Length: 405
Image (cartoon, rainbow, N blue to C red; front, side):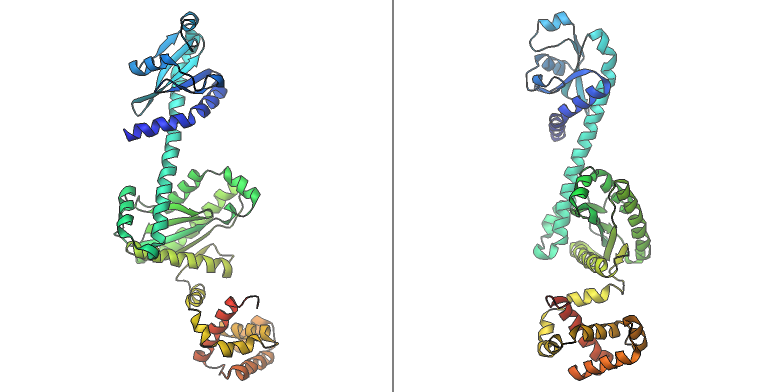
């Protein structure tokens, strides 16, 4: 019964649009009434909202009825033509009227009714898709913010509603489409983009079964929560690279030129595990876009990504232990040069020759700067442990000192 109510609602929402499109396409005058006999779509717009009593007869009898010009003249609000029931899943939900001499328009009846019912089916599928996608999005939002409320019972209810199981390890994958929010022009272009088509493509690329969850979580991000064991991870990078290529091609076809980026975390079991994987994927994406902007795929276990995520995870209270010492270098007249030199030295594996090449300075110049840093901090620049502590403090301080760099 609920299904029937939804189909009637969809008919009322799209009737006028269907009439206008079909009338223009086929060159016929037509109307659509609902189950109560009210005209809800007509190429003669003054008739919309009026009662068409003979439609009630058509619905009750479930058969075609024709009216000649003479017969129509004797009835209220009836024009000559043919009226046929509109069926949706074997249920009569309205009436299609094709206006004209019955002998002339009868040959169009079957074709036009099939066309209208096909359009109704398509609109219903689209409506059902957006309802499903919204439900999935709400579930995904609750899931990725699991730590904030930890309501497993509600998440289990969503799983039942969506027909998914959470008893296998899952990995979170984020698909970033930046041009969806960048400019007003692109926003207008995106308005013409089929979200259904985009979502279907992402599903096609990543879904192996119906337990794999795909939905948007922001205007520029899609999430995939995919069943995957750790042993399958070698295949994941290839899958993500292939997906990035296909999505880039799709966006270009829509005249939306952008760099598609994809990130992923590790795989874990349960709701908390999926939330953890999302957190990893999100941090990986943010670091990857900043540090490796030319890449298309970012993995949480990449050693070019992990150090930055590690630094982000260090509590700011760590800096308080070094506040006085670090303050000395921030006030130094050559702060920019000294900090840049030390960070480059550490990121060159503490190799003086390599660091000098990376900084485009002479080896002796680099040694002079390192000696100056040793004087300021009383640090042995040959000690990995001592350099590690200062490196973390300087990187963390650099990222959180307003306007220093």
